Length: 456
Image (cartoon, rainbow, N blue to C red):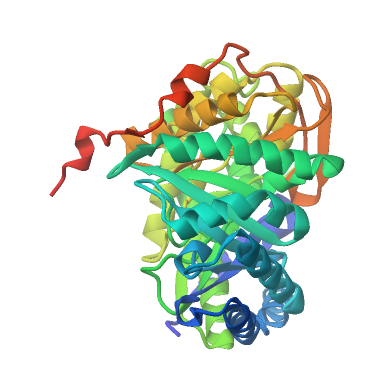
């Protein structure tokens, strides 16, 4: 293991960040390749998957607890990401895919991790029979399991947007919401639709272990909105250049702590270290909010004019600070703005200060996209698909990862609330544009890749 050296001042600063500023390691995620589990028998495939997950990650929870105790640094979640299941499914049909999902859930339970991601497909250019079977299984799979997360990549800068897949995802999200309606449609909180998905993301619900990754890897997701907020408050009314420097230095310190945890966990698990994902991932706890950072920069409320500019400064400075601290920064790295998981965002949405249109604009400069947004349960599938298409277009044109995690809350209307508890939080149901996008979605086919794709 490469040794990291820390000064006494750095150690004291880290202790203070933990005690007073809510610094934590949001997740230690073990990525596991399942490519060697392939079999022409679904029974054998499921046995192979269970055995490999259990063998590789059996010590994750214990090691994570030991490191947290030794370093005095909270580790909130332990997770597993596996090879996109559509790549190992072979000729599996929908029923077989449901059995595989149940196997993943049992394996996650056996090793006591919070979530397992990778019930996934990458269909930006087209869809195989295995992809189609997996998509068909998603609603029931997410309704029948507790820890399984799913993701589908529907577009990329190189391939364009698969509008047939986007239309299907609108229907799948609706069906998932209906099947889990008695639990605030929580199945939709475990489902992400991506453009330009990355292969080393440790954050759920979109984590999967990409085919270009090593056999196994330990990836760490660091979170520190409270640390950044405190640093900006302490700086006072400085100019933007000085403010960016303060955020960069703060992100540097957070990343150093994350890499130490990641490398230590990897060494003790006997696995390679992968990346640190430096994402300002908020929680519903007050003081752990990206929205509050934007307000401290100078907004009366997130959603006010200037929110996108403030978020652009924050996201860029976080990435620069992280890149200076480690050669292994990856994943999504930046600032998340999940509506239900950020106390400031929740308040702004409740008061009508932030709308889905403003959130879409802000996603052009943040780490991901429209995340954990509750919309009326009667929102048409075509409207959901059109929202996905808009967000994917931002990612495609800007050569960045974007994503959609919408919750059409069954039986809920504008102003009602959904409550998921824990890190998933709670959120008011906000309106969407009621004009129809049906004709647009019905066209089908693919929106061609932009000129930026021609880089060879």
